[in-house]
Image (cartoon, rainbow, N blue to C red; front, side, top):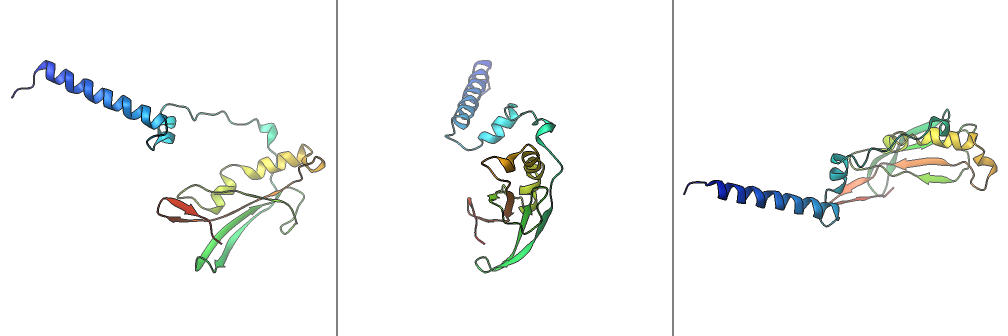
Length: 150
C-alpha cells in the first residue's frame, strides 16, 4: 500500500497533535519533565542578583563523619558568616542538595556564604533575624526519593 500525500499529512498532523498534547500535559504537571520543558523554553533564565547583596564570605568547613544509621561515611559542609569562627553557636539553615550532587555543592552552588556575609554587612545582626550558618549533609538515593538520615 503506497503512502499517499493525504496519508502522510494525516500522520504528521496526528504526530504534531500528540506532541502538543504531551507538552500541554507536562506543562500542567500531569506528566513529569516540567523543569526540562521550562529550561528548553527559556523560562529559567533569571537575572543574577545584584552584587551589592554579596560580601566576602566567612569561614567554610567540611568533612565526613561515620553515620550509624547509614553505616558509612557521610560528608557535610558548614558555612559561617564573617566575624564568626567555626563552632560559634548560631541558628542553622539546612541547605538540601539536588540529585547527583553533594554537601559541598549545596552550600557553594547557591553562593550562600556570600549572601550570608552580605546580610551581616547590611545589618542583619541588629535586626530580628540573627546571622546564621548554612549546613548540609549528603543524602542517599532510594527509589524515587532522597532520604535524609544522619
